[in-house]
Length: 115
Length: 482
Image (cartoon, rainbow over all chains, first blue to last red; front, side, top):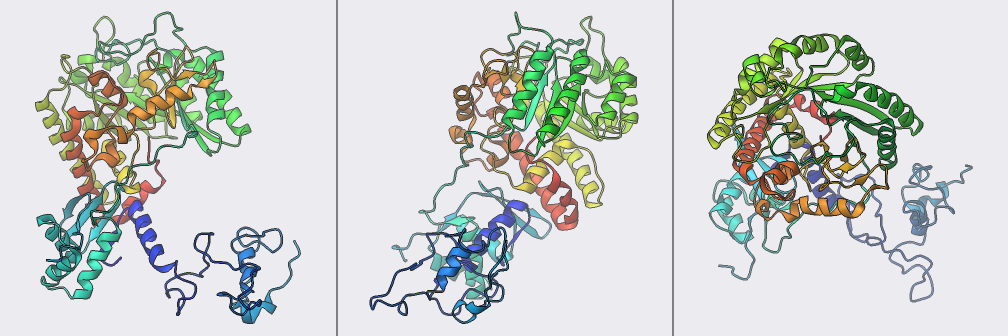
């Protein structure tokens, strides 16, 4: 906010709330990705993420799905869909995918973990 | 005219100004923002009349702002909910969760007192207590059950607190000592941090008691009404003799020796005792209290000591002058000690938006010598207001809910258009009961005063934020509710 400057703590929270509504949530297919100000961006929560899961497209393959199939890995990891099957992002392995900037290209960089 | 478009209008906020800087205090959120000249002009335009967004944009652009800048100002105001369209929803504070963990327990260790202050809410003409046939001193059984109740009801909280109260608290000092030992041990077992404080009239302090208070870092608030001639008007023994000469040397000794916690004075203002500045400087400079707080006596309107309207105005004028001293201290980075200001600034700084005027019956309860649980210390020993017993099942959830529903800001229609409601929430339950016979009644007799006070403190807050913002860091560690 340029014209309103937060002074007290509640105002800071309002500012963050408004900023989050601008920068953090955007359609996955939207070109350009999240705004430059946004932090590493993962959609979280079942109401804002469309996840194809193990579905197939109309041709019986995965190529036509709106997200690459590798995206599933992130759903299991980041949003803890299957926290027992992959390292969990929330508590124990926040950096597990740090070498994997793009799942479709860099998935080989994701290694096993030994708890 | 674009009549099909819904016009924008002002939402609820209170505007104030420090030098060149304009601020808004948003209601009900409690956010304080400094606003740009463009945002200020947008507000001025909407104050004249509601306008559709495009007309507001045109009008604001006409005042020397680029359309992009004007649009930004409007968007910012809209997103912070300082302006709204008619479809905008009204927010109300959330209902408290059903199992709100207890934080503070006020233990009235005795309902007996060695003084006979005429205005006392426990013994005076407007008392709500019904102590007949009940124990006069808290027994070890009740004290233990009270502490156990606190520990059981505060699960999930890291820090908990016990305040000792009376009657005159120190008339049951043996029990105070016992509770400090027992509660410290039990809290440690539960992994909780506990601290203690007490309120006393000061007349029974002794070197041994002072040593104990110092050793256990027990916070002390002394009820005192100022210099001798004012203090002795109403704070008297049963034979009518004033208590000042008895307590003064003892309290001075307490302040001298007690370095582990700041010692506070708590002054009751009455029709006879209203010289706020003089009282403050006496207690601050002559005694060395770290903080001095004032509250008007709670009494029916026709009592001799009830403060009349003219004197409430005079008190406000003195509060204003003393608050200006506080402000000047704060701007130069010094503590002042007028706790009415610091308490309000702490709440403004956090931006709290209260569902209830205080924590009574929610995060705080009182327990009397009988073991009955009361919403706070002021209702202890009152059959009508009891919310259960620590000896028999603890809190009665149905009674607690009824009390809280009554006191909720949503139930106080008079408050719904008042900008001070995030901080006031209708005012003290006990004051309401004494004045109106209903704990959920807004304290309408204080409304103008409270609005004036809130505006004054917002101005001071704004000025400190402009001239010495780092001073506000002091409030980060303070509890929003006391």
